[in-house]
Each structure stands twice: as C-alpha cells, then as structure tokens.
Length: 469
Image (cartoon, rainbow, N blue to C red):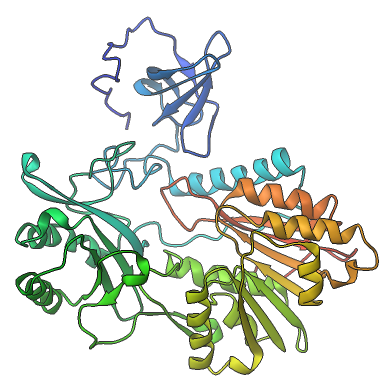
C-alpha cells in the first residue's frame, strides 16, 4: 500500500505534480532510500524502497545532497508491506516495518558485504546464511521515556518520536513482548497517579527467563505513597521494580524478595544472572543462535586455550569454557567482570575461567605478548569496534619473532559493519589473516541495526565448514 503524502515538510511547501520523479536505487544504513536527481545530486528519502518511483518533499538541502521524505509514490516495490504497528512513522523505534522482513535481512547482508569491501577491501571467502528469528515481540530490552504532558492528556510512556526528543503517544508496541506491550497504558496511568510524576524521566525494561524487571529512574526521593503504588502495580501485573536514583551503579530493587533476573543458553547448560542495566542482547532467541554458531565456527578443541575479548557478562565466555581447557575473559568494566566470575561459579565453570578488567581501547602489541598465546580468540566489541586490538595484531604480524602468540582463528561478533570492516582490513592486510566467512544476524528486525559475525584464519587452511552453521 502506498503511503499517504505527508502534510508538508519544515519548509511547508506543497509538492508540485510537475516535480521530478526519482527512481530509488538502494537503501542506506539508516534505511533511507537513495536516489539521484537529474543533476546527479544524491537524494536520501525516508520511507522509500529500492525500485520505487517517488516524488520527494525535501527537508534539508546541501551542496552535494538532499534529504527528504516520500511525498508521492508512482511505482511501488513488491517488497513493500503494510506496517504491523499503527504507531509506525511517528514512533522512532522502528525504521523498516514497511519492508518485508526477508528483504530487510537481505539489505543487511548487502550492507555487511559492501562495508567489508569498500571500507576494508576484504571479501569473505564464504557467506554465511543469515541468522533470523522472530520478527515481532522479540525486544526483551528497551529504554522507555516518560513525560508528563498535560496538553496530550497526561503521561506518555514510550520511545521517542522519529527524529525528535518528544515522546511518542503510544499505547502498544509490536516489537516488545506481548505482556510488556500490554503494560504501556497501565504504566501511563500508574505514573499519572504518582506524586513525583514530573520527576520520573525513564523506565528501562529487562525481561529474563522468569522475571520482567522495570527500572524506574527518579530524580527525587520517592515517598512511601509512591512506593506503595509501585508495590501494588508489581503485585497486580507480575513485575519486579528496580529504582535508579542516579547513575546505573545506583540501581537497586525496590524489594529484595523474588527470583533473580536470568537468561539461559540451553545448548551449553548455562544460566546467566544479570542486573537490568547490564548489557545483554535484546533478542533472546537470536542470542542463543548467535552463541551456538559462533562456537561452532570457533571450533574449540579439548586442551586449547581461548581469549574472549570484550567478554561482558560472559555471554560467550561461559559457553566456550564448556569446550576449552582454559578461557581468559577480558572486559573494560570491573562490575561486569565481578558478575562474570559470579556466573562462572554458579555454573560450576570457575576452574576453567579467569577474568580480567582492563581498558581494551589502549592495547598494544606488548600486551598481546604478555597475555601469551591462545589457540583461538572470540572478539565481541561495542560499536566502536576493536581498533587497538586489530592494530596490535597487525604490528605483531610484522615481527616473526613475536607473531607466534597470534591465534590461528578469530571469530569477530560485530554490531557495526563499518568498524568491523575497518578492523578486518587491519587483520587481513598487514595482519596476514584471511576472512574465511561472514554473515548478517538480524538481532533487531524492523530497525536499520546490522549485527554480524566474521571468521578470520591466519594460516593457509581449508575454508571454515561448521556443521549447522
């Protein structure tokens, strides 16, 4: 179904029917259609899909490019679908609900391949089948903004509006688990009735195996009446309240009773306890598939030593420890390292595991030498990537006397194809590795977020073939 023309852009000019029709050529990493006008200028078009012919309402003009939204649609893509959420287009949580989910995955796979080649001059020897899972109700982590807006009838709880600091007026969300989506109007009424409703800017959601935790950010101390309202809500709707008076380190339970917040990796018999503000993957099913594939590709053998860089809570570290003789997990956050060790003990894996906290953005070749040789590495950095690590590898590769400490195989899990491509260029060209496999992971359906993983081999070996990968 073609989208209705918008009422007008910031310049408030109507769209003329004599305006040029543009043919959309591709999607960029922000899920905008990309076209060129008759003069050759690049035009980024929100809401447009490849192959479509559109007229554009321009919102921004620069010398080399313009940016706008679809004002009229003449030829519609076969991949265009009706968005499942009635708030799509105003809520900023999703950007791609108008594109068939299979086409979303293909777009992300192409984005990964393009980044690897254009930024890193790396072509994977084999493309992995994309990891896919539920397209709806998958988002087990979310940060919801809260605003008391009398002009809109009271309290709003939800994501920000698209390209705005305002909170979307929403009472449901198709990507949240159904029971969390159903809480949105109830949370609006709860906050509306609280004494501190003007001083409660955020609710963070974390859904575990048994527990749904809600973290309430409050700028002033809560009185007993408000605490009582939270307890009544928890009792009525089966949630667990946590309070955050200041930074993330101040998060604590409203009441200490009740089960712990956990998620499971059943393939490895591992249960991970976490705090609701700890980093965990938003999509439990995809995370299980991702960990399983990463370990099959890593192909750890009995007796081997593995290093897990940017190990976080131990999402990969603990499963690796069920296969390897010893694992070193290295992470920048001391609090995450403490919880990783607690999880190792709780799962009976402490004898095979060691953790260390250090700044991984300041690594040098001498640090890799000090850590000693490992047979395999797992690398799972934040969006900034692992530049210092990749650069240290490249520097060591140039020194035959020191290069022996480098692993034979690296599995790199990425949440940013641009930084993966940059690091892959270092690993492959000065570093001497081959990129033997790479593939996309649809961790965030309906968003432009591209998760992926890649495999690097240092010695001349057969391409990676892992059963079930």
